[in-house]
Amino acid sequence: MPNFSYQAIDGAGKLIKGHAVATSDGELEMRLADNGITLVSGKVKTEGWLKKSLPGERIRPRDVIEFYYRLHQTLDLGLPMLSALEENATQLPSRPMRRIVEELRVSIENGNTFTASMSRFPKVFDLLDMAIINMGEETGTLPKCLKDLCTFLEWKDEIRSTVKRAAIYPSFLIIVILAVIGVWIGYVLPQLADLLLQMGVQLPFMTRFTLILSQFCRQWWMGILLIPILSGISLFLVQSTKRGGIFIHRYLLKLPIFGKIISNIAMTRLSQNFATMYQAGMSINGIFEILSKNVLGNRYLELLLKNAFDAVQQGESISDSFEKAGGFPPLLLGAVRNGETTGTLDAAFERLGQYYDREAKRTVQTMITALEPLSIFLLGGVFGFIILSILLPLYDVIGQF
Image (spheres, rainbow, N blue to C red):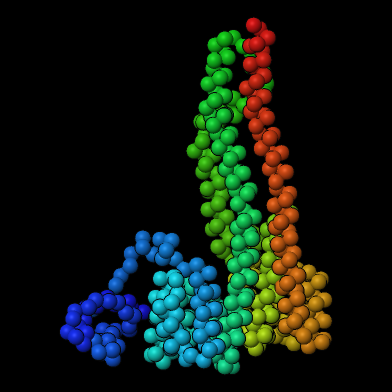
């Protein structure tokens, strides 16, 4: 929806400037006239790609969570939707989020539903968000649905932060090791080796091997850099295809430690999403349809979920469908079967979500704990090898003296 910058005359005859969201010039003029302001000129504001890419212009997950939480509070106090959106459009700390909320308000004023207005921003509002909010609009429980959605999204953001924290340490370690190897092997050792050779010192095998490695890296450094770049591009292109993405994601589940983390996070998303949507009153078919669309974060498990959905549509129970599809842990199968039998399916999935959430965090913490001594051992081995490559010929020089 266009964002206009305008010049107008207020009731005191003073020229004022401002900006507002409207579908057309005519609607902008009518909206200003309702406030006793006469439009003089107006034009659509255009924002370049550079401004949109700035950190302050991006919409973070926390911005969306805060919007949902504030909207839940205002609606729960009894304010109508338009007033609640107008309040959020001025109070939210995120400027791009305020603009989107203002566009939502204008769209609702023009007769659209809240969900239809949100669908104009697919990069901001997920399918799951819109499905839950749509269910809240239809059943008249929008404040509760927004509150449940906030709780779920806060959990999702916490999981994302946990995974990022887990990736910081090994990434920093790899950078340090590569930097040390680059400086010592690429510059220090060749300079020292030339000096020793001029002195007639015979270099030991370890030093000769390091020098050969150094010469190879200096000669083929561009190819060495291109190999990981081209490999990353190739993997990206392969995983962007349907069959390639399923194959890679299936292989990722088999990796030690990392596969367990990916599986636990996917099972947590499955359980939490299912419980949230089921409690909101969505049908089983609607839940499966949303969950099979890039919600779990693993395409192979989403394919299995789609196969389970096909079995559900043929009349199978949910637990039998999961079992027939394969790939789902026995704990999940047993809990779902018990939930179907006792009529507490939402509670079963909620307990599963809490369990896999704890398992995911525990596995990540275990990985971090294991990486610390392993990284020290690896870093010490690299430093030791390089230092021995330098010290061994120096000992020979000292022995000759």
